[in-house]
Image (tube, rainbow, N blue to C red; front, side):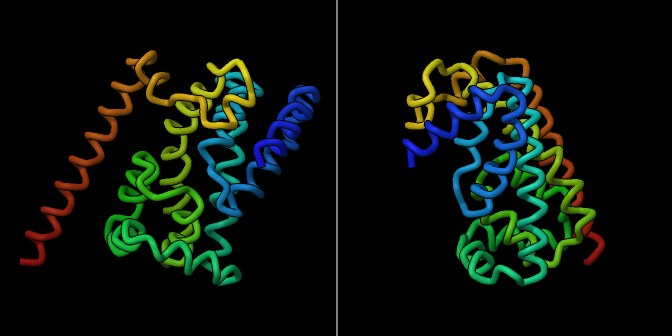
Length: 205
């Protein structure tokens, strides 16, 4: 697998921006088959730089998320749906999405507690509306995509990157402003969720 990724990376890199379309197709296909989105996002950063890698990986991530959601919702991919719902974290999250779907899906995206593909398929099977899913998915993918693309861009050798030699934490440490902003946003979302839950509980009493 590492050798295949290395060969594909060198091909896409030699093709320049024309290889961006090829990479998006690879990203969508691989992540829908449960390949780690984090590694491919870091690879996008190495291939196209922080800005280009973020945009390309974000495009691939959103496309993959929407396709997996549609398959999960239509039950055309029952095996993937069953695999997704085996995660106890995902089961808990899906049970809560019925009341606070947009906020909770956004938090799941930001926290990366549940792996990318299982979350996409599971949310499709949860009965969540497409409009709410899209509203939570796009902004929820942006911070993590930027961080992993930045971590990948900081690696000089593609083979080192493919073997896991990239550090999102180091990149976040070097971009403390971004990290602080993301932390503040997450905190506000958690506060909003808590207040909303309290209001609903009081209303039911």
